Length: 111
Image (tube, rainbow, N blue to C red; front, top):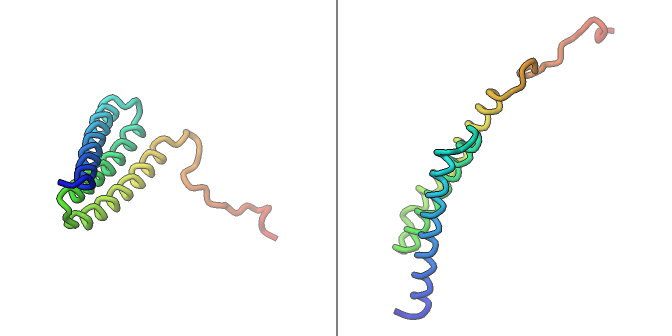
């Protein structure tokens, strides 16, 4: 094995170890997260970690098979995050504030 191949393999192993450590921290945040928003953000990070893990596996095997799967997971993670953010925004709205205030016409507005 040449020096670049050895360096490549060492860096890939280090990347996988960091992904596993981040996954352990992520599971702790999902389990003990103080709020629903923390749990939602950690689920988004979970999708990013899965994508990073697939990228490391693809680099380790030198196989581009997982690239379309990574693209689809990125899209699903984004749409899931937007959906959760909209749900939390509607749920955590302060009381007494209208949902979508549409301008109402009054007698003073008419000429």
